[in-house]
Length: 362
Image (cartoon, rainbow, N blue to C red; front, side, top):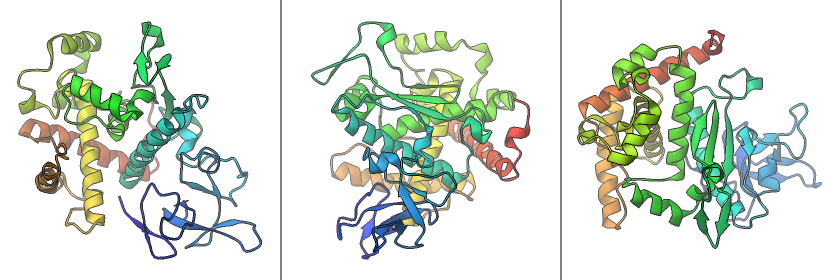
């Protein structure tokens, strides 16, 4: 992740919607592909990018809902006030805004979603809607359980629970994950090193890419790397995991305890960790720390640099009493699975650039 610069010279960050130095509105310019200051013409007319001067319209979720900071080019045919940006267009269900606290929860989820999609764009991974010709079509549902009473979450029946997960391109996130206290309770209850909003997005998008890139395409190679998913009932594996816990030797063979549940979850946890690696290396490089370019580097130098950065950042976090930034240990089996993900992504990007990924039969 980069930082950016306002017209006034102040540093801007990816989440900014206002420059804290000069007070200007700022937002993502799709022409510059950067956070830029937003200037209004002297006659009160068009909003323009302060750098490239493109005429822009704030995304509806920026101008009205205050949960986004991206803009739409206003001279695109059919673009009008109320348009959704390139990222908000994937929202199928938003939180119930008659619940006062839900706007802040939605804002936090949108922050995580924007960072997820930024990383996918950085890598060049395909995603899109049905109208884009992408299968499965991507969408997001942000929902709460049926009852919220005094900030406590209740469930009175299986049908009233919202399960964070993925199904045929739809990623559902339970709003409780946007509540830091509730999320920390769950992290401790499940003995997880991290439980973050961005982590949920990265995990669920991994299931999306399993369906897009692995299912019906390279399942035998997947089974050789992660185990035969066809021979293991997912429901039985899930019940066994929650009743008996993770495999006793999971640290030697898996990137996380949850990865030991089933080959599908092993893939999702490994793919999500790969996105962690890419994001950290990209951010470190843009912050002036030596790092390899995750868009072009081979896997071994990526993992080597990530581990070295992890040692440094972990010690900094410990100095402040925080959890480790990099909890993973890449054993030889884990590195082998990471190689599968690395090669899968590179092949998908090459094919997408050639315009042929969705020409194959599904």
